[in-house]
Length: 188
Image (cartoon, rainbow, N blue to C red; front, side, top):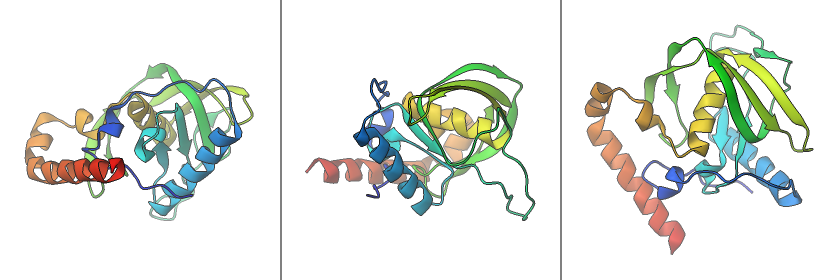
């Protein structure tokens, strides 16, 4: 089942995640449905809050090909096969910093420069309950940080520079109103 993506302004995006204690058939189906939703939205990552859920679950599929057609490896140690499901993910170390443009499925059409760590070490469980400890960089590190922000109720707008927020104020207001309407429609 494909979900609707929760839009900025919808209070569901500000809810903090709850750890998954047991990996059930429902959790596995949620991961499958989130991947379908992410692909339909042309995204590379999706957190449970973005589909109105509060489980500590993230799906990622980092492309091996750049927009210019150049093939590049997903940078991780040990290697991670895509797509990947992260249950109860935690960033345990980070180093370096880089500023790159980021988009977000919950902020359609918005791309803003965001400063993040270049390399992160993260731990998580997979759908079989196996614990992983990975060190990643590049787009993979950025995507993990972005999606973990969602799990903690932090949004792209919270990472924007103040001057950028002012530039986008009218557009953000319209989007926030749309997200509030989405929440009201879902509640009724």
